[in-house]
Image (cartoon, rainbow, N blue to C red):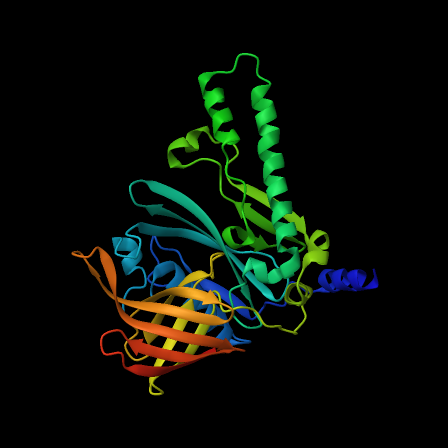
Length: 356
C-alpha cells in the first residue's frame, strides 16, 4: 500500500512544465497540406534527433537531411502504399515529464479520402518510441487487453440496447444494429493506438464501420480512459519509472527502435525497426549513412534472433520478390550481431549494430 501511495505522490508532485527545453515547430517547407512536427530539445539534442528521424522515416518515408523535399513521397503517392497522405495539424499533449505525446491529424487518399488521427509517444530520457506492451508486465498483458475490450463492448452494447428499444425501427436503424452487432472489439496492446495524459492513459480503438458504412456509425472511434492509479498494479518496472518521472530506464525490446552500426566493419548504416507483430514478423528500413537511400527489410524476431530478407526486385514473371541478401543476427543487450549474406554470391559480411 505504501509503495502505491509513494508512486502516485511522485506523479502528482511532478512539475509538468519541466519540458521547457523542448519545443515543436513545423517541418519545412510548410504548406496547407503539410503541417508536420519537428522537435528541438536543447537539454538533449540527440533525443530530438531520434524522435525526428522516427517520425520522418515512419510517417513520410523520408530520411532526414537527404536533400529532398520531405513531403515528396506523401504528396505524389509514390510511397510504399501508393496513397496521397496529407498532414493538417499536430498538437503536443500534457504528459508526465518523461513522456512526449504528439497528436497528428491528416487525410490519406487512395481509392477514396479518409481522415485519420494518430498519436505518437516518446520516452524523453532516450528518444525511443514507447510501445504499449512495454508499459505492462508480460503476465498482465492479457488482463489489460481484457479491460480495454470490456470498455469497448460496454460502449457498443449500451448503444445497441438504445437502438433495439425503438418500437418501429427505420431501415437505417436496422442497418446500424447490424453494424454494431458485427463490430470488431478484440483489440490487443499491439494493435491499438494510445496517448498519455497528466493522470491517465487513453487507448483509442478504431470505429466499428468501414469507409462505406461510416455515415451510419454514430459512435466513431472508441476513446477508453484509464487512470494511472487503475493501471498501477499492471505496470512493468519500465512503465512505473516512465510515468513516475524516475530516471531509471530498464531494457525494452527492439521494436520501433533506431540502431546504428556497420556492414563489413566499414560501411556505416542506420536501421529503424518497425513494430514487432504478434506473429513475430516485422519490417525495417535501413540506409547507408553516406547516400541516405532507404532499403527495406522484412523478417522474424524469435527468442532474440533475427531472420531477415532484403529484397532486390519484384519479378513479374515469377510474381514474387527476388532477394538481394539474407541476414541472420542475434540481439545481445543493446547490440545486434550477425551476418549479411549476398543472395547470389553467398558471400558473408559482418553486421554489427548498437541501439542509438
